[in-house]
Amino acid sequence: MTPLTLRSEDARVAYLATVYHLGRPGAEVDRETRRDEGTGLRTVSEALHAGMARAVVEVDLTPYQVTRLGEALAGLANEMKQYGIAGGRTAVPGLAVAMREVFPDVAADPGLALDVVQHVVMLRNRLAHTVEAARAEMAREAAERAAARKAAKKPWQIWKR
Image (tube, rainbow, N blue to C red; front, side, top):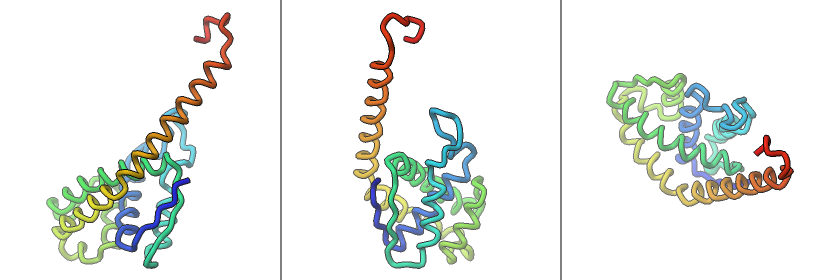
């Protein structure tokens, strides 16, 4: 588990990123099993939403969740640009409501979302090293699983290769 300590502003941005991520169809579906395993950002979103009023929010993330949060921050930056330019409209379900909840000034002037984009990019840059470390750990775990699968195969069972 990777502990993340986020200031209030960063927690609000991370919460919006999780709302963006969860609003996409199939976002919580595991890539290998093709099922919702509950390993994604849903629990992180709930924890961030519950702790947004505090000055500092601490969450523990798995390497998979860290990489998904990094991807969600990248997508949120693009979606917030579109939100500001399109006058408060977004294609992601629930994002406009969450945006108005987290940043009330944006409700009055959707163009202010463009100012929030810099916070998204700064948080993404601050988490870049953590995301890369999580990706490396996931790659190492995948290599270990592949080696264990290969070791479990019997050489005479050529149909299982």
